[in-house]
Each structure stands twice: as C-alpha cells, then as structure tokens.
Image (cartoon, rainbow, N blue to C red):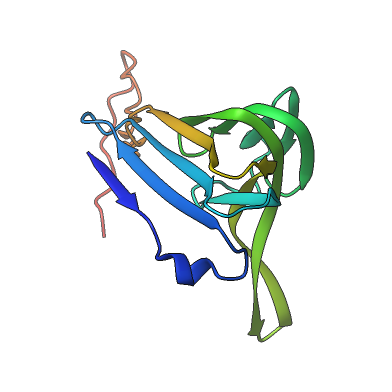
Length: 189
C-alpha cells in the first residue's frame, strides 16, 4: 500500500522553487513501512537546507534500563538524549514490551534522540512524566536547479508474543499421617 503526499507550491513559498513529495509505503504483511522524501528544486538557483524527519515512539519505558536505542554504534537508554553523525541505522529495543524496530536511513543522516515529557500538577506539586521518545533524522542537502534529492527511512518491526504469568493458587499441604498418632481433631468453630 502506498500513499503519496505533495503540498501545493505556494505552501512552500518560504523557499522559492522547493518542491517536496512524501511517499509512505506499508508492506502487505504489515511488519515493514517506509517513507521517502523527494526534495526537488524547480527554481533557478541552488537550494541549501537542513531537512528533518521525526519519529515518535511511545512504547518504551523510562524506568527499564533494558529499553534502549542505538544510533549507528552508540547505544543509550530512553532518558538520555544523544546525537550521532553519519547514522545509517537506528535500532529500538524494548525488553519491557518485547519488540525490536530497526530503521534503515538512506543516505546516512545526523540522528538524534530526546525524551518527551509532560508536566502535570498533582498533590505533590509539579511532576515531570515521561511520554515518548523522539528520534530525529536530519540531512544537510544542496539541490541544484532542475534536480532532486531522495531521502528515505525504512522501518522493520519484530515482536514476540509473551504469555502473562498467571498466579496459580497454592494447595494446602496436608501433614502426613504417622502410624500411632491417629487422634481426633478438635471440631471447627
């Protein structure tokens, strides 16, 4: 399945000549999805810009140190923001929710992560509550007149079904009867 989004040229009037096309593709089995941006220059002068695409992942736990994000070769927990240049792969691992998501980035970008918090007012005062993780991919691009640049992020998800551990009622243990100790039990009240 594919969805193509392309805003009218006047919507991008802040950068004359810039055209953007966003192509979202979802695989039939639903385990892979991708987005490709085509930035084109319909103007007469070269365009230089920083283009950022952000992904928000809300399934990670800030309290679980085994929920991690890896940008290239640098690994971090959800609560610690990082920036990595020349990132070609981003891996999200959740030990608490039993899933992995891998993003392939082409061409490599400057990757960055940061936690997103909400602030609530409670009986104890203001509290900062973790909501989700933002993963940003930023490309510094230069587009010559009548040319285009393609930027792509492809994601693959892998999950594991885990049966919840059900509490089993424990049986009362009976004392083994020893020979010669057959005494009457006192009645229950």
